[in-house]
Amino acid sequence: MSYKEYKTIKNIKGNLLFVEKTHLVSYGEIVKIKVGKDDIRLGQVLDTSKDLVVIQSFEGTSGIDKTASIRFLGETMKFGLSNNILGRIFNGRGLPMDKGPEIIAEKEMDINGDPINPYSRTSPADFIQTGISTIDTMNTLVRGQKLPIFSASGLPHNDIALQIARQAKVKDQKEEFAVVFAAMGITNEEAHKFIKEFESTGALKRSVVFLNLANDPAVERLVTPRMALTAAEYLAYEKDMHVLVILTDITNYCESLRQMSAAREEIPGRRGYPGYMYTDLASIYERAGMIKGKKGSVTQMPILTMPGDDITHPIPDLTGYITEGQVVLDRELHRKGIYPNIDVLLSLSRLMNSGIGATKTRDDHKAVSDQLYANYAEGKDLRGLVAIVGEESLSDKDKRLLKFADLFEERFVKQGFNENRSIEQTLSLAWELLGTIPSDELTRISTDTKKKYYKQIKEE
Image (cartoon, rainbow, N blue to C red; front, side):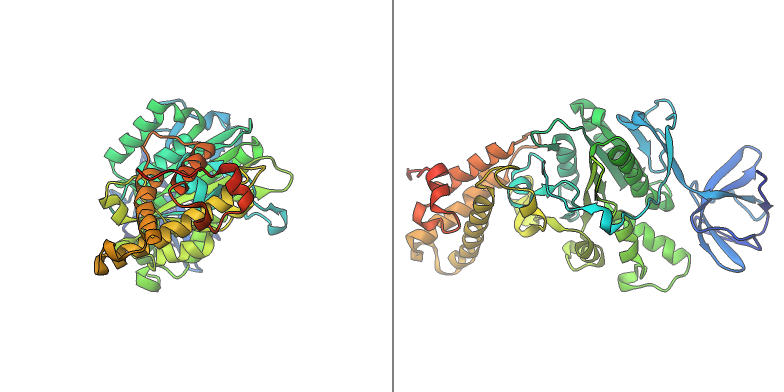
């Protein structure tokens, strides 16, 4: 096949090239930019119009001038896949960065993916155990769900992401489980930490890791999550695996989106982000799910840092519209030295009820979750009252709830970075805490369930 070459670069701005008088080219088409004899770079069509084509260069525009030639390849970006991607570490463009061999592709897939036909979707209904009590009990992750983690600057979201990547499994089933982990805009130090953690714990064997560094071109950051999801879809729908995709940090992705939008001189939307950011995020999040007739599934846990701890900021706000709940990290718990600092009162899993119960987790799961939530909410409210009137003026019941809130944070929320609790261990711990409250005050739990599990713990 012969390709036309163009030497009609009109302008260069940041990582963008503006090329005139081309033939009809497609959005997303891959481009080769020939700068010198041995300097050939890859780019992608970002925008097309009658007279002008905008190309984003993956390797920057340093050294490129208007004499460089452009060749359009007539195809979109693809990722070569095979079973050998498991246990490998790639950069943001899907090139190996672990000194391993090139992947011999069994199949090449377009990284933009195909939208799942709503009619072909199956409702998520199976429990995924993360080993973290606050998620498993009160914000349960269900196979095929998209459940984001809302964090903030300085909070240990990367540690939580690593812990989930290491511990997550499909409970009591022998089906194959894999983790696809994609980090965007991270420092070299963070990248080394991720690689070391995956390698030292053995989690790398069942993982595919994509690392886009902070000094990589911003445009590469827009490709990274799509590379990761393409790998996940291949493992899920071609190899019948259950795949958990962890994307961190979506905020860095959105900043790159804003940067590229500004370079293209588009009209900005809310807080300078492009008006199509909702659609763009949806094209990532909606790739989670289960398909009728396919054994595998893709589950997503995107992580984002809320700028200025603001949950109404466009990034968490739009994410909340698309996804099925959120896990919110709390700065106050972090100050108290509690890890993982998950605020169960602000967190929510909309698909939780589909993934729990006697056949999936345990018959008491829902009631225990409701009771923990109610007691902790009341206990937290009482802390504000104590600050005004003092603890002596509280009733005995209120004192018990106040103590319960402290116990809940110290024993249930708090757990070690390497502590992997099964759902049975977590529910047993919950009953220990509920044992500090008289049986008749546990109003969210049925009499039969209390007879089966409740044990009164005498106060010392």
